[in-house]
Image (cartoon, rainbow, N blue to C red; front, side, top):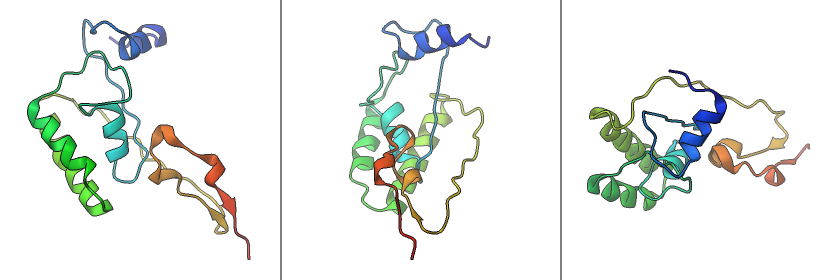
Length: 128
């Protein structure tokens, strides 16, 4: 059942639990940790009314918050996603690769910011 946009977004952002499964994820950050923390963590910034969380996930979320290098962030994100998919807490459907093309003199960290955190004011030209 593919929901029309109104029903889908009212399920995702609504205040009542969904009658069925409704899920969204749009990850664009380098390790996917920012996206995970914002959408699926035990303390998301979104109101995803259908999510449930476990104590084990809370422990991993705290570890993720302390990950201070891309390698550590990637490792904990992979561990969390394995945990969530192993028992069908989240069912991965597909992923669309993304890229950004810019001239060599354009300085940007767009994909390290996370999907909904694009700060275009931090992009500048450094043509030499």
